[in-house]
Image 1 (cartoon, one colour):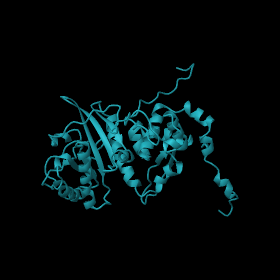
Image 2 (image 1 turned 135 degrees about the vertical axis):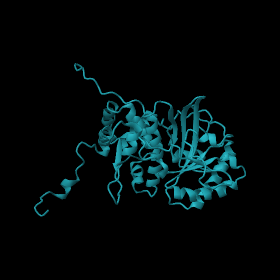
Image 3 (image 1 turned 180 degrees about the vertical axis):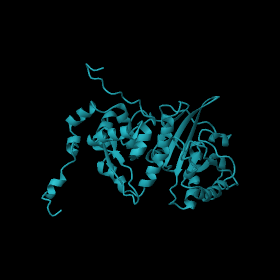
Image 4 (image 1 turned 90 degrees about the vertical axis):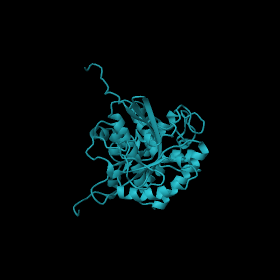
Length: 359
């Protein structure tokens, strides 16, 4: 150290190859991105914007065949300022890299939907603010739930597919006056009698909330069902089976006191029930235990996500997805501060360019 002659200001240069914030918003930079960004890149930017932050592992599960290919492409997107990244502190080992939408990526998304970046509701400092948000672990956990379902879809034989994934923010815009789910999902599976769709609201528990508060959330879903006339299952994902046992007791007390208990079908599952040796462990496995009125124990069969509707014979099938959203508007048209939800399954990867004269 005492022989080092480097001046302090020499250590403050930008990373090699990384564009400055001003250059990233220039017309020349946007023109360069037009020839570099693939359909999968733009899909990934929309997914990150919708769900605030995705880790490198989640992005690999959602869109890439290997960790190496994911790291290479994410490095390019980072250098182009399409995404930004941070690595949270972790006491043991190192945390994966976390990615948020970058200024150049926001400009691309806004232009794609005919909006200004300001109309997109994007600010780079707010996007990076998730790095210090107390709900970072919760947000990452919710996104891990859904990206594991995407990975299972991508590696299946086509008999199952995650067809919808709404973020907490989108759920709050639609249902926030009654309840704010951590996410909404819809999944299609192939059965002998045709395709079957299952939809649900997700309550993701990290073990920090009181179990009484967890149970009280069912009252909000009862008000939502009364308002919409639609009974949508509520899935409560917990970290351990021990936590699940306590949560089921709290949920059962509230559920039994509802005016119409069948309007809020609910089920619980715990993360430690997943098979770690499975190729793609996910909540689609047979880990779900429906909440039965008057019973709080964990006896009875556990259902897979595809068969969970069989536990509620009176449950009506989900309303067919069209182009309209739940507010009656056209979901394919973006409005200020809101983009249409990205399709959960990524587009097919673009093959490498063939240079003229090469075979």
